[in-house]
Image (tube, rainbow, N blue to C red; front, side, top):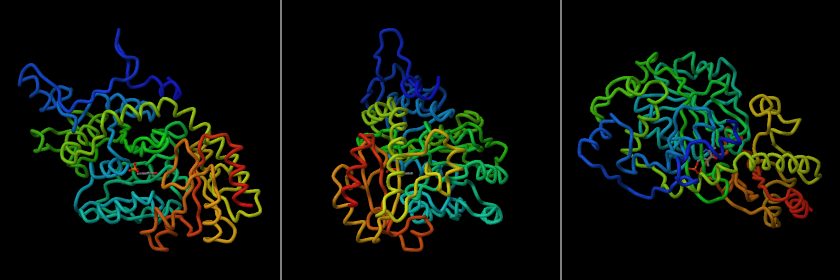
Length: 422
Ligand SMILES: *Cc1c(COP(=O)(O)O)cnc(C)c1O
């Protein structure tokens, strides 16, 4: 199946007489005929469901669809993108370990790593995604366990050189984790470029309708944990909290990572989305390919309009020919990048605020990447905890306005921006 077909059909195949749409199994528990039957599930001897904090069939249908879209072997849905980011790293790194991350990742991921996970004893080095090979090499330590980047950074719109970072990570025997939220698997499939794990905030384009917060982790099944057994004891030695199971042995390269995240992290931390939310997410996924295509076409037209307007100081959109990341975007995302554009209004901070107050179609919202066109000034909202130095390192200029172009008629979006600018 191609991507458009997977959006509709992957993950759930109804049998004779079963519901055409995925069923919503809104139940916390599952009944068994004997204790022995249930015991086999607890021992991970058989797959099945016993308690929704660990797994639920509705969730699994949707996870399987996203795994198919990314070309992975297994996936786990989480209750938010933040939970997905946390699990993706914490599943393979603990106190005393070190992780390399791009300095331009989403502000929420940056705080999670730089503040909360540091408190857990995990050390992070943030590298400029365009750093030299020497700088990247120097960031690795003997206790490095992963490298983390974002396909298209939110909101800096820096396109990450996945292939280059994958090579560096693999040379040091660690996986590359990619947050693929903005590109979606419609525009970019990081596994094809060497990434090992993909995360998503499904809250954005995947849900696409401002309806449900959620996240997802997908495993490519390509990283050989056993070949680097000393680095990943959590996967390659017995888990005493789970009857001495060794995940990499029992579930193989394609299943170990997600099984551990489910059996251990989901069991202990419980960031599971509700089956109802997964059902809503699935509705979004069915139209993902169509919507992403429209988001990109609209954003391209808006970016070109902005670039030509005399009241605009600068425009950043990887789909514009003069953009620093145009060629890299064409390599990784030949069909389009995303619907998010950033720009500066002439006159700086104050002019930008006045401009935003005059918009009618574009709504001021701390959200991006959904059907509605919305707009935000990060320095005074989402990124206000960050110092000027951190903002600059993250590629967010103090006068940056972030516009998330929706799927309305593009002429209405452009006319709205034109009247506000004028
Ligand atoms: C929004 C976002 C997140 C966090 O996801 P939530 O669903 O809000 O928890 C992570 N990464 C990126 C790129 C995002 O845009």
